[in-house]
Image (cartoon, rainbow, N blue to C red):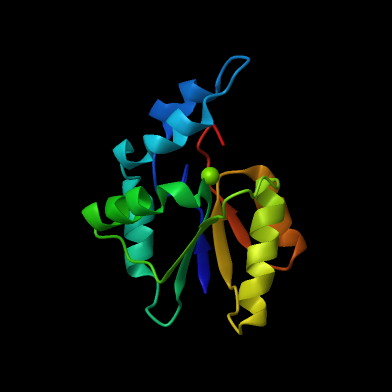
Length: 142
Ligand SMILES: [Mg+2]
C-alpha cells in the first residue's frame, strides 16, 4: 500500500489555518470547512500514476465527523483511493500516535506499506522510525 495524508498533501488547507491561530483554536470550524479546500494538483497526478497494484490508503487526522464531507471532496476531484481512515470519536491522541497505531493495524491485516506522503515532519519521522520510507511534502502548516 501507499499511504497519503490528506491535509497539506492532497488538499490545500491553507485557507483554514486561521481557525487554529490565537489562544482558542476553533477545531470544529477548521474541520467543517475541509470540503472547500482546493486540490493540490501535483498530488492528484501522483495518485493517478502510482501502479494500480498498490492500494491507496488515505490516513488522515481529520475526525470521523467529516467523513462524508471528505468522501464527497474526493469524489469531486475523482481521486483514486481504496481505504480512508479518519480519527474515531474521542480519539485525541497525537497524530503521529494515531497514524502509527493505524499503520500497525493495517500491517497486521497483511498490507505492506511501501511509501508514505506527509506534510508533518513528526509523522514523517514516525513512518521512517517504523521502516516506511516517507516523502515530506512542504505545506507550511500542519
Ligand atoms: Mg497533513
